[in-house]
Image (cartoon, rainbow, N blue to C red):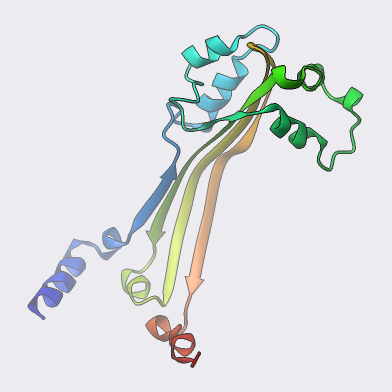
Length: 185
């Protein structure tokens, strides 16, 4: 009981909001922002850059957890499923890759930095009456296609400025879920 009272007194004295939990999701890559990732992909020159150059510049799938190796069947599936385009309407790099068969491969890149900070009233949050989470960060994705060792196509996308507010309201607080817990099975 003394420990509980001491913790409550400490919470009141230390600034209650500082005691709210936080969390983050991140892909451990060298890019610290969406713009850094974008610049890295924009520096790649289709029909000029080699796969070996990319590996030296941080796009090594063995060392960079954001990079996934794509096989030819996976690439074909990405460009054929549900598209209204005919193969001759694709950009030159995509056509070159698809025509190369097994010599066509690719890298799919997916990186993110997302931070979740609980904000609001410590007591309402602690007793589950109202929880507010401020979500910020960025997500980045890119596709790089190769024919043998030569880059033939690049494209990138993502969300450069993620900012969401998530609010969960439980009028009964800690008793909100008891009805389901007490229901016979």
